[in-house]
Length: 97
Image 1 (spheres, rainbow, N blue to C red):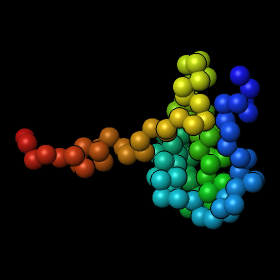
Image 2: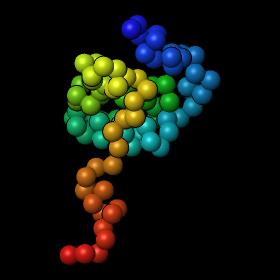
Image 3: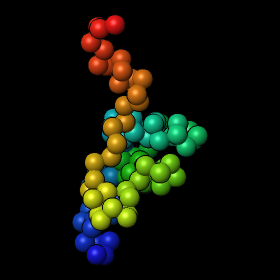
């Protein structure tokens, strides 16, 4: 299977909104990836720049798509939840203790 068949997405250079500021989910996920990679994330990235940085940091941290899994982790796979475990624990606190 070629890259074109696995990833029908347009290149970021062709995105109509690629020059708009990155989205909240992109910023949150980049914060997680940056923390894991030991890199500071610039706050003023565009959507396209954030997308490129996410791909680079996923590869660097091992969070990227797994090419050996038969394609299930390809470009259209859902990225891991950007909520850190401690934040998740606070968010789902049931009051039991």
